[in-house]
Image (cartoon, rainbow over all chains, first blue to last red; front, side, top):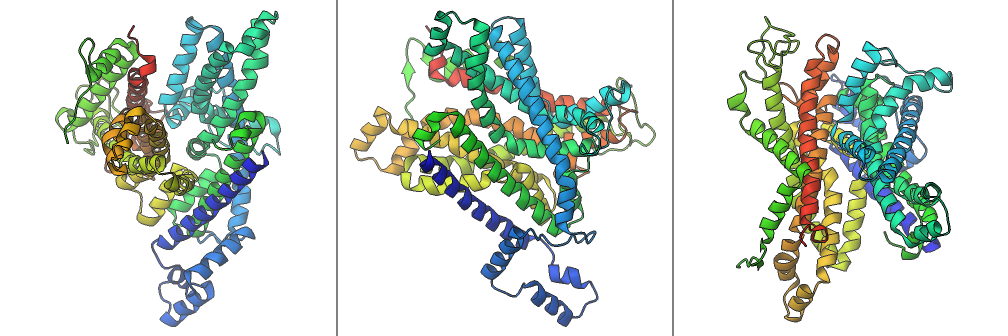
Length: 317
Length: 292
């Protein structure tokens, strides 16, 4: 177990370093001279040179990289070139929106996905399974942003069941907050639910074939109890794995969902920064998402090894 | 180099068996038909479309579907939705194919190397980890920031994001095939590693690569639509299903059909690939053969 953790941690550190180098070099590739941008069109060459010196752009690439990492580690992401606000403040203001949305979507996807998976297993070869399979296939094939537009059109505008846009901080007003996030969370969770359903069904079918399930049944446990006690426990492993694998899709999905429902989240910050060429913000956003992604994957792997003892012994996935 | 096709006189060629199995699966057949329709529409878009994709008719905005001359209606600028959709499908397929090609061309050799030579495995695995650390949207954001949003950048971002899974699939196949008797036999006959990879492992890994390509394709099609929807992909006036959806969202209550049809086109492409891909996987999987 310890061996596995150390290897996994070490791999994550290497990945983090390599990813930060990619971001650092990527930022250098951005068009436009940052010193020129800061000095303005009319500046004298001496003034530009002074700013270059001040920004450390004349130092060696390695020194610049180390400074870059140092600043990031201290949480200093610089200022937005568009508004002049501290990037850290912008992130602090928008990140909670996205985290609440994603967490809510994951909960919705797990509940719906596992439930449909169980139904599909319980009624194999009958219409409920067929329905669950069809729903999963649709969930995989329908782009969630289209689903979002349709949901706004029919559920929000036509029937007024949910608000079409807007955000209320959950910490301020939990009921209104969750109510405003419900439709976006369902939309964001759809494809995740579809993948979870398919895998839960497959894992349930496998589990129900195993010897220990047969033993449990022979001892007189009802099928329902076996399903809940053994099938569900095994599907937990599946769910954890899938959330790790689907994280990238979830991040992209959150950006587009925020756009459709006009939520003031991290995705909006990212898109605004790209369209206004706000490089410090782009750099911070890319780096934070990447680091977050690597860390969550690490957490998923550790969690996975806790739930599934076989991984620990093998040491390699 | 001659290619010897393994034939079983009683059962026909292996390829024939795959086709028969595909045709027998109703879902696979449905998917295949959907794909055929989509590909024909995309390829023949310039011939079928009654108007140019960016042709504006200011005298006929917001026409209902079924209006004479505008079978699926028009958008806010009076552009024919049917024509734009056909060209949008064409662009979707183009981006999809570009990213599949990128993933296959880069992923296959790396997967073969990682699977065959243990020494390279560690290096390539770290590289895949780094690539996996960047969700495709972030790659697209980076590329757009560097050289502006475009069709090529969208395809590159989507392709790069799929390279790691392609490497893993090919690596897994290589590891499996490496241990088979015919490869061990070739080794004892002193065949070089390159020869073994190209004449023994690659031909046997092709079916897994094709199946993976059918998995990538719908992901890339949705990805392109998503990027274009956000303004990070294809730029107007080039039509894209994503741009159509993003435009339609502005006047959604007035002309809901402008949002419904492009979305249906995306669903048709993706459902086609998903159904066909599932059936193809079953048909190519020897353990799943329906033969008695």
